[in-house]
Amino acid sequence: MIPSPIVKVLSTIQKHGVRALLMGGQACVFYGAAEFSRDADLLVVAAPENLDRLRAAFRELEATRIFVPDLNEDALRRGHAVHFRCATPEADRIRVDIMSVLRGVDSFDQLWQRRTTIADNLGNEYNLLSLADLVKAKKTQRLKDWPMITRLLEASYAENKEAPTPEQLRFWLQEMRTPKYLIEIASKFPSAAVEIAEERPLLQHAIASAVNELETALTNEQTAEQERDKEYWRPLRAELEQLRRSQR
Image (cartoon, rainbow, N blue to C red):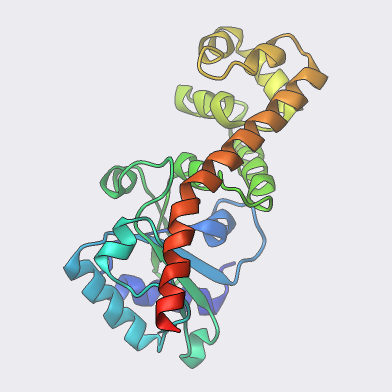
């Protein structure tokens, strides 16, 4: 069950008509891969009217910015995150992180078309990144994100493995990080595994049931992705440090 302070934040964002997609840990809660998250991470359209609606929602939430940069189109479109802390009693101390661009993920309009919409028993609707897009967004340099990716994939597989759609099968073969399940999927669907191995070569080890080699390849895949994320954030972190110095 989603905690009531998070409900307050998300329902207020929705009430003000902000075009936003939930991502991060709270989205993982909705997908059944996490038990609790006290933050709300949102991907928004960096357009003037949408940011005005977001500011109105933050005024209702009594939210204040806690780090640089300011909430503006330029910072968001450059890839920065903008961080807020709520003070309204219904959502006291809840942190809300806002972004508009994610590394390795499609544009907002494309993500919006693929979004998942979930309703609760109070009539609130929540727009989330699709599961596949959430997995891509979670491929960061942070070690804590990778077990979450594993849990997201395992939850999807457990729920749908008896009669997967072609899209689900492709998703698992492209993203699954659990050697046992990769070998199982490759055994059940060998032609699909061979096809997708052209874009993800480590599937050759799954096809051959070579567990040790598969584990090593998965580790190397994660390391390479983490390095790409570090390179992506290097210039953005330099910009943030410059902003901090100028404000001092």
